[in-house]
Length: 130
Image 1 (cartoon, rainbow, N blue to C red):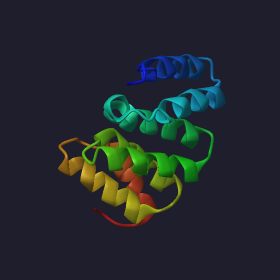
Image 2 (spheres, rainbow, N blue to C red; image 1 turned 135 degrees about the vertical axis):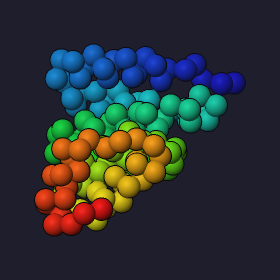
Image 3 (cartoon, rainbow, N blue to C red; image 1 turned 120 degrees about the vertical axis):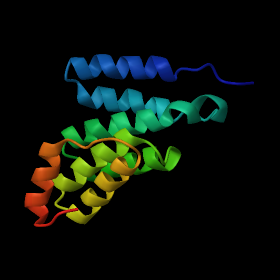
Image 4 (cartoon, helix red, strand yellow; image 1 turned 180 degrees about the vertical axis):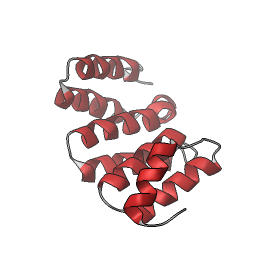
């Protein structure tokens, strides 16, 4: 018997906590969503949840967990542009410029125009062009 789909409820609670700047509580709700095991329910939206949770981990300065979640989102959806863009900014913060460039190039290959200010900052920080 399939589980009820609680993912939207957990995600909604997480968004409320984010609005209240209660980021640890938001992480908890996103974690509950990714723990749902029913593959018919969970696979379709877990890439979004991992990406959203990664953004919060990044805001909290937990780069290791943020990177892990961005990687999980991309593993679930290899064409997930938002995850590549956000991971490129995380790599930038971590001073892993080659990885940041790789994600910028992947996002552009998927058809998005990356913010030119970010590209300029990455060029300056890395000392190179694409």
